[in-house]
Image (cartoon, rainbow over the protein chains, first blue to last red):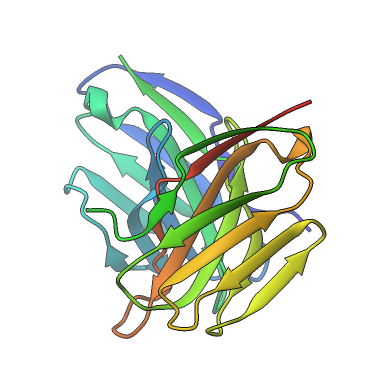
Length: 110
Length: 114
């Protein structure tokens, strides 16, 4: 049984560009949450998707948006990238309980 | 202000020593998880505690949830170099409609020297 998978593993972008990150949840999980983790810090909640709708959102600007597909996979989009958006982006999936994390996508903004 | 305060932030010890990491809050949590994360990887779940006063053991690791469900601790006995990593506590706040949103502490970086 595959766990949570994310793609790509690493990504380098320049300021002002847009990026899309992808996540496939663990089998049987219907909820996907996205987190941003700066170096040396704990993850910060971005938003959560359930039944293809954004159910809850953290303190992130509208430049951060997402989508969930009928097969429960999800995308995170970030527009107008800033240097401060450089971080490890984590996806976590769950079904009525504990969240399981993917390996993350390392985004570097130059 | 961090909702979950972890201490210490850094811990450097010798193989065989014991250690305790603390996770404290003024808020009540319906559940609390401990994760271990290695560089460049996602957090890996170690344990979930849900009942006040609950104690769970995982080999050399002992996890405790405070009676009031506001704090937790992780104790490692006879630490080994393989225990090296970032330890994160994360909780789901009680009440409201959190939908399982996790609030993380800032993490404890543990280094165990051979």
